[in-house]
Length: 421
Image (cartoon, rainbow, N blue to C red; front, side, top):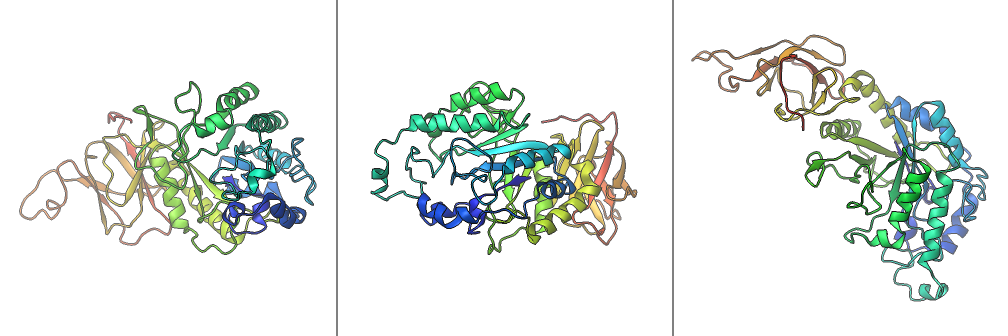
């Protein structure tokens, strides 16, 4: 679970509202800071929702681009402890995760529209304002770099072991710009030094740097296949939203259906990746009904189909995917899972599966699914038109089982050799 929560939850018009509406920090703070009381904030409830949905780790936005901090930082007073919330919101989040055996992740913005030393670039709320350059004639990115490292040091020192850190922001189309602006090599060294076992994403622009990243992070995007770097498959995670924004957006109507979300989870695993699905809590700190309904529905599906997700990855390359399906594979027990996105009429053909399958069942109820293969053809062989000699012919009920996306669990023969990607 990704959680985007901060001052931008009050206007409830997208987490980039300050940038979109070109709000100077002084006005943004004056309007919203004294109203952030987070009176319904209950991180135990957050964690319970994540766990019930089948999630194993949570990444919290400790600070987003507006510079508002959810922890008791000594480097700025623009934080939750000085707002009406009056407490360190990160600490209670970490405690709730640990109590529930959920791994802890921090998101940290490398850009900060509040900080007087941060450059006024093409993304800044004050872009194009000639007077903005005169507000701080001694602007110094060297000071900003020290500020960033100081805050990262707090987050990686004050809360025990942190499992994952999600740095953000890489400048689109300008490779290495951020690397220079905030000393990515220095941030990497600091992070590895304070938390040697932490997993770091790829947004420090250190793609060619030794040990510069651990996994890649396509955002709001599904790769066509398992991502590669220099020809090699790499660990990856796609971060996705329920709708079109990350922060709480009251009036947004583009929410994905439960079927879309489950299909997205399956597709991600079928390509060897992880899904980081975002929730934007309200300004009071609770998940709204649209989010909880979808989390509950995903959780119901995962409860009966988790075997096709956990410990699974892309299927061996020599298993061909039938139309309207995704394949996932567990190499530990040699099980292949066929996720039926669209219900076939009575018959499913599995190309090239002949002689490789021991048993098939529905995963949700472990009921047997019968299958055969075509061994001969003739003028009266109605299967000959559609089934090749090496196809497996799976007999399905006419009516789709009452689950969102049914899954066939295939027990592969032990002597069935496969080539993993």
